[in-house]
Image 1 (spheres, rainbow, N blue to C red):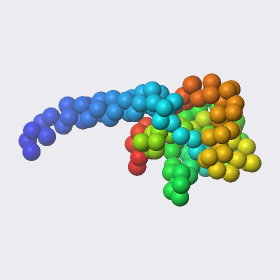
Image 2 (cartoon, helix red, strand yellow; image 1 turned 180 degrees about the vertical axis):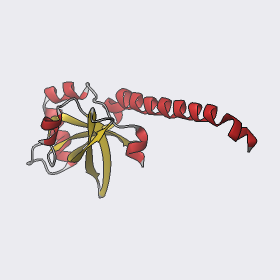
Image 3 (tube, helix red, strand yellow; image 1 turned 45 degrees about the horizontal axis):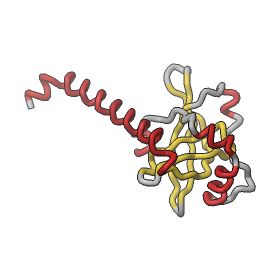
Length: 149
């Protein structure tokens, strides 16, 4: 027990470094594997939450796969006033088959209300090459623990 009391700052430092490295590896995994193992879902932006000292914000969104609902969060480069206009709207979500919690919301790819299922969404994405080029520019996401917990 004295060991932890004496070296708690060192342990905390390495723990933070490990979390950052794990987060980075998850993001790289998505970038490398989304073409082979990626699936699409319809995501709905539920709200916007700020972080820092009012300098940034991210979207809180939800999407459904099968009968289960999932949540995620994603940063954006939109202004706050533009981002507020997207609350309640539907956008493309990309996730990995083997790890559904590793997902990204594409605010640059709105989903039409006529698309009702993820299967229809998959067909729609495959028909338009412009969407494929947008998928290559993977936007920022929240930290891994925000999507898992």
